[in-house]
Length: 387
Image 1: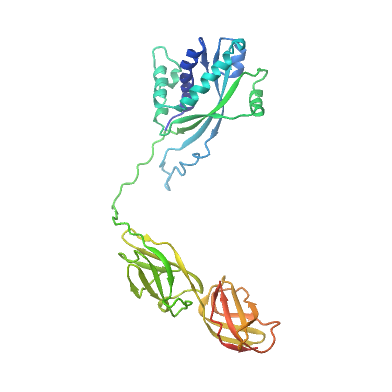
Image 2: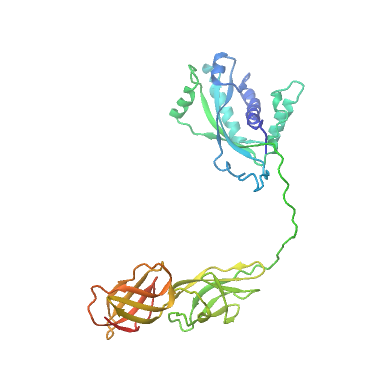
């Protein structure tokens, strides 16, 4: 990174970069680093280009990369750094009848387009000149901008006439001169503080293994019928069997009935806590704990009981239903199986397997009961209830 001299070093580097080409293309031309109003007040001094840093702003991409800079105990773990973007106004002077400002502009644009980087060699030339017997910018002799990891890049800014007019208006009674704007980024300035040494490794923990990531293709039953809590499901895939293989259903590890590289079976009756609806499945194995993709299957509920009393229908399910799961109860004609009513179960305060809903507006009679929970339905041949 670099110290407080970095901004000035970029300006001096641009001056040095342009001085040779400008002087060669337009004899007698120079490159200055003055304010435009000072350049105007001094009067004509031959052709040339003036470099003026008119704005500095935090770089949006790197402004927070060093946070946090202190550890929990308050020790500095990383040097705080400010990431800056510099905005320059290049104005051009000379005899307009000889088109000297335009010629200097052409040289400047050509040079910055061909050499848009403030290279380490250019920075070294600036610091060498500052330490010379006849120094140029002597205060920059100790600049360490060359140690910055990323080189500063100079790119043109497309200011329109209104933006350029506003920029020149800050210089009181200074006539406009032919000019262009460029930005230089990124400049990183560090606070010169001593950082705490990283804690040593006490016990190295290195795990080496062969990459063998499992892949699940599908999850189903052998007969491809709807899956219920008493069934055995088969996980089909590739590279399913590995060291310490674990199958996770809904995030919890479960016991497997059988295991092979392409098939793993799980008896759902041995798994506690499953909810009706979509059940995510994942296989994890190997020394590197490689995880498969997440597949899923639909776990269908079964209606165990159905009772009606006091205008309320209560249905008992074989699985616990989450408080936030969406539940509906369908009433079917026992003879034809046609749905006659669909009752929405009100929100519950807690997980339960007893689902109650009012039967307001339902005609008295006998109905078969079917459950719908988060898209998973029970068999339509459920218990018959008399309302």
